[in-house]
Length: 195
Ligand code: GDP
Image (tube, rainbow, N blue to C red; front, side, top):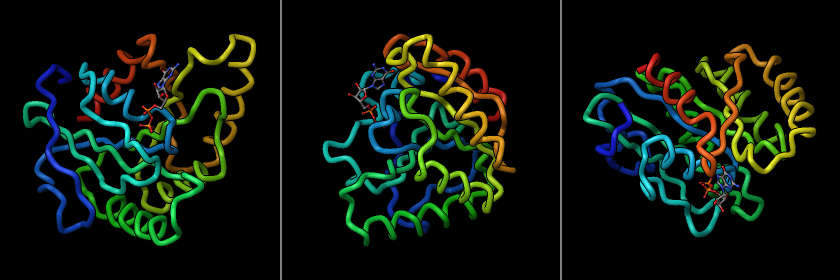
């Protein structure tokens, strides 16, 4: 499912550019710099499949990756970059809404949350959007290696409490570190059950 044959399919800026919905898919959402590119690279065993954009918030494409034509991994644009122009934010919100509401083959969204920061208001907004679109989502904590053991429990509690308010949320959190390889197998296994 995640062998080295995972490849980039296309970057999409509008719904009419979406690849045909001929296979199941999962998508990844998160604030700019949350570690989304690193996680997708770790999942697929690539060093640089998903490229971190040089200017956070500039990359507004939805990027589709596939492994042996079996399913898509969909990389949504990072959100919450403070300096992003308002037109960019609005365009991204429209595209996101269209994608989440209109993609029948989307099985689950993974919402990435930085283990150091917990759930922020922009993360709440995306979770609200997922509720409205009735897309089941699951939180993946990133960069767990950056948090001290003693701080981890409090962050996890904050995230659990925030997630519990959302009807579309799948309650189980996945704790990962792309750097250390923690939780990557767990996430792969979850995806394998979905696609
Ligand atoms: P994106 O903007 O969400 O795609 O984030 P990136 O994957 O580009 O990561 C942002 C920064 O966080 C980079 O400097 C990464 O090296 C770093 N980073 C990503 N994942 C981890 C991790 O698991 N542990 C640590 N320590 N740093 C990470």
